[in-house]
Length: 590
Image 1 (cartoon, rainbow, N blue to C red):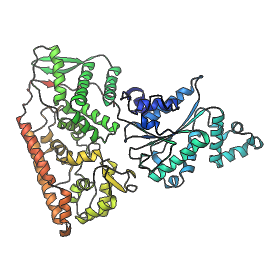
Image 2: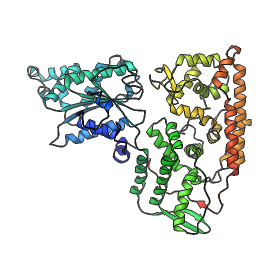
Image 3: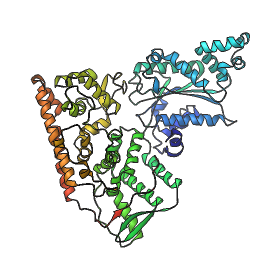
Image 4: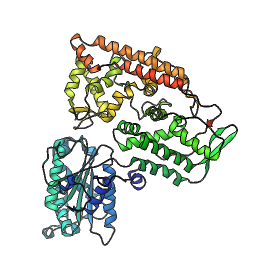
């Protein structure tokens, strides 16, 4: 959906008012006046009073949404005759991070970007850049110029044009606001230059500047000590409210009609769309209020990126496996019981992270769509080793990198990762570059220098990377879904249709024994890959390899989880065949 749709319908914020939250920050930006004792902001904010604001938050936490919403408020404010006018300039610099010409002279580049923004303005402000009769309003000195001389002067000297335009706004009593967004992956040197230029705008034109940066670019990390800089840290919004607002949209689209959702013993159970939305709401309440550990794990799996988190739940609600999850079955059965007093189904089982992972994986994996899956395949390195084919270097390289890289706040240099990998047998430089670059791009690794390999110097394991390394790499359901897309000999494979089945709604979910066999064979394959790794490791580096591997080999970790999971699944009661669930026949809007 577009940002406008999200802003209007889904961005709900009801956070703790004692924190520096989106709602408080937004109100502060809308007022654009800092009151020391207003009670709106924390002591930290009051201690860092200034007019250049660093809006700090994790990737996907809502920085851009908040700033676009603020920009929208500025436009609405200008339509009110009794309000002070605000001229807001919103610069999205996402596509400039690899432009060396742009980065080589930040002040001039920003001036040119501001010039382009004003030139594209639809309110008539652009006339002050290229229409002589408007340019003459900026200063009496321009009365002596001809029309052609004026327009050529402002086109050739854009800094001069911006200077006089901003001074004109000051004289008119118009509030000047500059927003700089999407510079998360810029170097600290360039971010500092942007802050310095913003401070100049504050000094020369009383401009209020807001710069959105990732959580690692705090004034402390940037080594900035300036009383004119104010750091505002975004907190996590109320995700339950956001998700419920999205579910409510279903009812608004088509509030009428019933769904025949369950058939059993010759009976049909019809539920309204609102019934289904209520059931989804119960799932969310249970997850957030009772299953806190699972909820936080899912949030870490998305690396705290709310857009990715919402995509996970979009897949969850669309998964064919949703119909067999205990957190769906229990409220559904309760609703059916209200309709049919004689209905009974013993479906009690504790909810596990396993249930959510299977739903997250299923929509794409069941279609064998590895490229579009939102879950990363940790054992599929696409790099092609010439004349070698696929081997352990492809299978284990991602996992080994995750084993080498420390968790935040500790860091390791890219060069040291290279040195360790090469010393234990990963000799192909291009393959290492490819693997590290992929992990950065997928956010399993983080770097304060940026997401692209060329810019990254120091690396750490992200929250998402920690989940993949310590949880998913051994999780039965993860291995079950991704191992069909791992390059390995046919003797380690099972028939994928026998494994997953081909039902429209796979409640039977294929042959359980084939699933067990598939994971068991994959464990044997990983065991073989680890043996190859040890044999190809030079003798002088075998101790380093042991240190990287840790207490347990990967194959041992997978096998331990597999044995526990298999025993639990074999002991669980199968669902009665007489109950059949029908597909939901309405869309959940993306």
